[in-house]
Image (cartoon, rainbow, N blue to C red; front, side):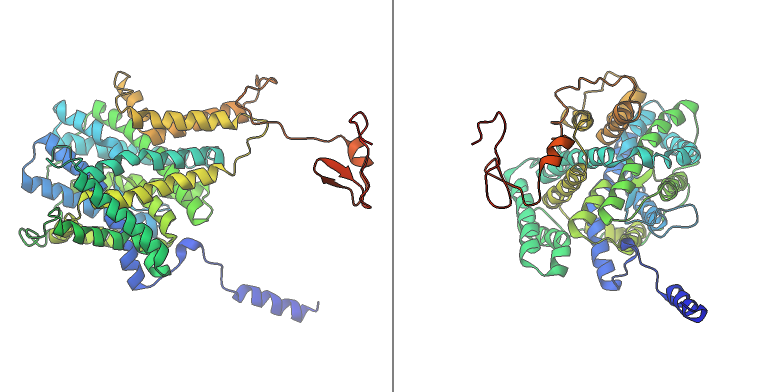
Amino acid sequence: MTQATAAVAAADVAAAPAIERPEDENLGFGPHLAYGMQHVLTMYGGIVAVPLIVAEAAGMSAADTSLLITACLFMGGIATLLQTLGIPFFGSKLPLVQGVSFAGVATMVSILQTGGGIQGVLGAVAAASVLGLIVAPVFSKVTKFFPPLVNGCVITVIGLSLMPVCANWAMGGRPSLPDYGSMSNVVLAGITLLTVLLLSKLGNAAISRLSILLAIVIGTVIAVFMGKSDFSNVGQGAWFAVPQPLYFGMPTFSMASTLSMFIVILVILVETSADVLAVGDIVGTPVNSRRLGDGLRADMLSSIVAPFFGAFTQSAFAQNVGLVAVTGVKSRYVVAFSGLILIALGVLPIMGRIVACVPPSVLGGAGLVLFGTVAASGIRTLSKVDYHNNMNMIIVATAIGAGLLPVVAPKFYAQFPEWFATIFHSGISGAAVVAISLNLLFNHFKQGNSDQQSVFVAASERRLTQHVLDSLSDGDQVIDGKLYDKNGNLVPVLGGGGH
């Protein structure tokens, strides 16, 4: 090749457009808005549940409760934009919706009950998040400890652990309601589920991708006729209200509350690590330690700022990981639009009142597909694991079992120390801790491993000696368990009764 030809080739390579990552796809304003709203509807119930629980525990008035909810929506939108669009050192730039984490509910209620007040809760969240930001780089190095064996266990447990949320929604949302668990609620959830399936099967590509959103809209319309959704009060109340910084007062700090909340922060870091790696696997994009660290730092920065607006810890929502899987829409700009919608809901209470008219039963029907898809993605990841001549089977069994214990028995760890219960009460973090520990024990620190493996080891691989291979000729084939040469003649088997 001449120098001129080489120069032209080099110029062509330099001019060639870089291959875009799947998450960088730009679908246009319309699809971004529609798919973004689908994400918001999926996680709306979860993001408002935490402030509702905390407000009730704090004895807040209806007006203050409304402001607490809008603050959480507003900060969820800010955190989502930071996570999806990113700035230097902050944001994984993956399609992850951020919102108030459920992991801290028990600890926040405990702080309220011990006299810390809402200011004590906000101070503990801010201080513990600063500590979380400091330790985030350590967590960003754990990607090598999340092979498909560990990642698959965690993703599977994420999906399965969300099923009680789905069931609660399908039954009506709140046990205090008179029709909670009624047949009409469950039927409405079933109609929504059936609508999702029909739209996925009969619709074109666009309708199929929007099947969750369309099913929620159709389910809500049906709920209006069933008397389970009422839009008559949507116009009442303020239409516009910007969250006021320090509305609930200056956060107060105590060592005990901060340490207690720091355990929650560690749980959130583990869960977010699992969510980032899970969505990276679903999208089909590499997630290295730097990218994971950027995602964790975005979580912590958002959680530091949130208390000053009256909100709590921010983390990725696992149910929206399922939505990415079930719709196949991988664009992070779609989720960025979700962030803009959340901000709009945070400053436009009327929009929040409209979304609040979606009955929990409708969300339950859609959630069955969403959460089940997360579990199915984990099972698919586990199918990539090698189970031959190792202890991977028992690692999977133990990790998933440990992750499901608090799901099937919520009071399982009630008598344990608070720090231990905080970590393992989350099935996601429990499964992650067990899977990582057992993977290290059996697959990294192999000293002491028995050469008499247990019954949990998959059957040994078949092996042939070199002598047997040397005796085979081109054209030999096995038919019904007998060996024939290329001419179709039966090859005798010594000691096997051949003739």
